[in-house]
Image (tube, rainbow, N blue to C red):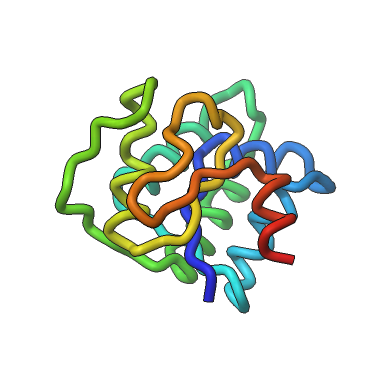
Length: 134
């Protein structure tokens, strides 16, 4: 099983463009057959906060449905080690989660904010993730 942490921008892109690569990755994680979504409480809270922003025009029912699915299928971890590796400090939570979950990948639309590799975790774009896993 491939373990992956999704940056919030991949989740939002997947919801806004249902036929794009982020949507394909989101679906893969929610189906949970071969790709396991890794989540921490910090990431889950950020997902909910960002989805709730008015500019994304998501109904409360849709938000609750997505968060419920993530809560059910996610591999939940409590990161113990703090990371200070991203150019945007808000992104460190994704590496912290990936390390705690022993994830294979962090998928992001902001590659430039992350190191290419952090421990055994590879940071990749949605396109690269699809190329590597399908």
